[in-house]
Image (cartoon, rainbow, N blue to C red; front, side, top):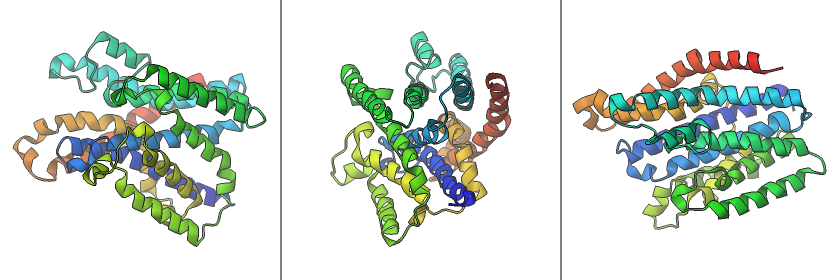
Length: 339
């Protein structure tokens, strides 16, 4: 397959990354009454699940078949940590410093323990929870990478899965506390599995049955929000264990790589932009949402205005963050950290 065609298909994944961030924003808008409540009620965590599948795919696609060496690991750490941690730490520090001024903790940092749990990436509060989970997987991925794609690959996977089950059972405290890596590792590993078969997927010329299956996935997305299933009296389980939330994002990545049906998207600049600002959209939309009633005042009650304000301001702020903070800092850190 030509490189241009492969890049075309990878552009779809940028769009999926942007979609994942948008799902989180929409869910919070639903929970706060700016959009129908049926779009909230845990829908945002399905977007996080899509992030995790994409992340597991990206790590393995970029590094798994490369030689495992000290220099390679150092460059890997530089690339991944410089992408995620600067904005995470900026958000954590600024929001914590503002607590005495605004009188509210936007990210549920209510104690010194909460702060250091976030800072040392042990456990994240509120929407920050996904970042420690992501970083912890970056560390765990080194085990898979060291095992390599040869005869040790399947035993390494088996070890990780067994450890996941054992640790998850040991630390389980109820559905509300499932924001730790052992409850989400399978999302990353599914992304890893997709990366393993990517050379084959990129050779697929999608025909009728691929197209039908891709549209079937789009139809099933209607039932992805837990609120929709509750409205139809369908069973709802925690997102980390929800078959729809696990397999629909996985299939979306597969069909995106194949370029089947509605997932055959042209590599337009806006798709690249959505992917580029996805992380800043995820972290920065919440302070904007919290500030919206104060900014809009009496206009906050106008139907649709609050949602439009949050979406528009988030896009602007996330773009500014990416261009003037995240990218410059990332470049500097990589220069200093890479070999």
